[in-house]
Length: 77
Ligand SMILES: [Zn+2]
Image: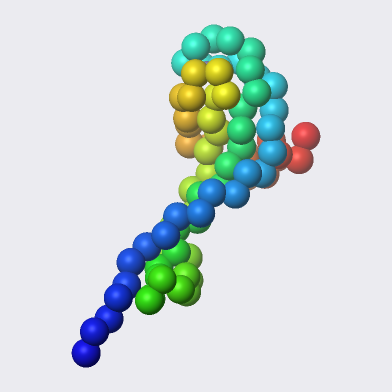
């Protein structure tokens, strides 16, 4: 029997905000994103195994992990 399984990560953008970046110090747009990793069977995503939230600076590219509550509150602004 032949089983083809793996994982696939999809990034959902929740929004943007203007904020001073902790890495470069410039005030730039920060992208708020949700990364969902799903288990796949024969390239079909079945169920999520990991969900992470983070922000990424559009000026320098530095990214930081944030909590789910912080990401949703920042995206709602
Ligand atoms: Zn930056």
